[in-house]
Length: 133
Image (tube, rainbow, N blue to C red; front, side, top):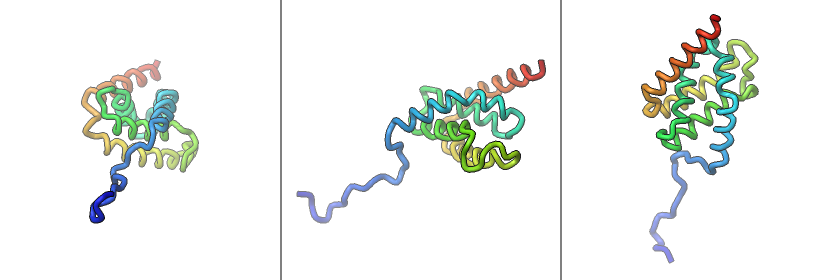
């Protein structure tokens, strides 16, 4: 019998993924649609480079699992065409995506490395060059 004055265990205040199936769904969604969405939004949204760097960070095995889960969740939201504010509304459509992504970028800022940013810039330069041809 536990001591009557002992504290009862309670859930942590730190948000932890309840199961790995959500991570798998988010990762699958992000991997399947990210590059197409990044190409489509290139030059239309100011956070494309950050989103690409976040993708590289999320797919980096050195990134801690909670950070990967956060980034894949935000990237999956970005990829989905129908969300709180559908992306078809010019000017407003990406504001909810931006809010979600900025929150994830902030949580992951210590893990999005210079290497991830260089990979993102290289991808952006390659895509911009391909558009000019």
